[in-house]
Amino acid sequence: MRKPFRLSDIDWFLLAVAMALAIIGVVEIYSTTLHSPLAGQYKKQVYWLILSSILALVASRLDYHLILEQTPWLYGISILLLVGLLVAGHSIAGTRRWLQLGPMSFQVSEIVKLIIILVVAAYFADRRIEAVSWEDLLKLGIFAGLPAVLVALEPDLGTALTFVPIVAAGVLFAGIRLQQVAVLCLVGILLLPVGYHFLRPYQRERIMTFVHPTQHTQSTSYQVTQTKIAIGSGGFWGKGMGNGTQSRLGFIPVSHADSIFAAFAEEQGFVGTLLVLLLYFALLLRLLDGAQMAPDRAGAFLLIGLAAVLFFQVVVNTGMMIGVLPITGIPLPLMSQGGSSLLFTFLGLGLAMSVRARRYVN
Image (cartoon, rainbow, N blue to C red; front, top):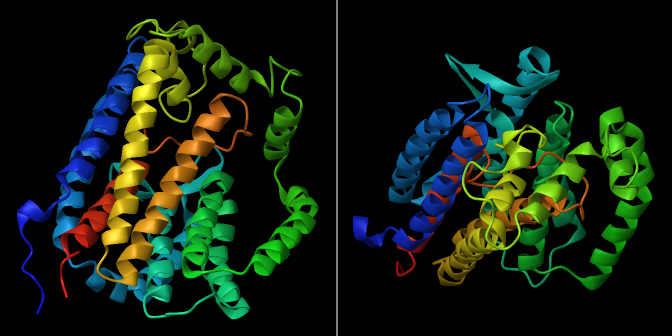
């Protein structure tokens, strides 16, 4: 018999850490856009934060098994939505990533990430195997590869890449042989020239900028050059809120979104940056702890997938800002402006709380 769900079962620590990061993000969005035409953008983020936190609490009250049972339907709907976007989606800056819902636009690919996490969790839920087979790898590759290709065609290569750590974490947790890893790595290396051929010109420029960072500092290398200047100028204590010259004067592109880490580092310095990274570390540890305590494989795989994609996004975004990874347009979870990204993260955390709340259920 299932244990009745109680409000006290909510993982308030996980929710508090997530809210702390989101509030820091709102404050930084306010600070970086205060004296710009984008002033007031922080209000939209506040509205999304309120909505996302409410939905997270609702998700935490649901039995995650009921959600997993609907995975085939959710996956099918997500594919139809992605195809629909390519055919008749709302175009912004030459991309078709957003579904228009009245006065709001919603990025479908963000929720598709959560659906892929559910797909992997549902796939391995009852498969008690010592190691994944080639058939398993092929099936998961198709399940994740189809939406990834559709997202990349929007084009949104950054979000498409986030599907990779979800599947990778799943197969690693399920058990993968060393020879399978070697073969997959070899195939990936051989396909790199093919993938490069299909990249758009601006995506190729980003790669070349990463390879030759000191060239074209006023054109293709401009963004990474300015973010590194901002981070370095922040020093130990930072310049203070609203005093970041690189962001306030518009030298950092999209300082309230993809480049928010650099803007924050300039204003709050090493101390503030360390605090934010420790909060992310605490969030990830809590998710992994929940995976260990999960009542079944489905719950464990769900939390592993969520932790993997959040870790990937944090590492890639911060790596972009300091110039050790190429620019891919991946936002910093919870902090970067973007309602769809915030909603995906909080819904995922809501399901994580649902898993943790049922850790003692037999």
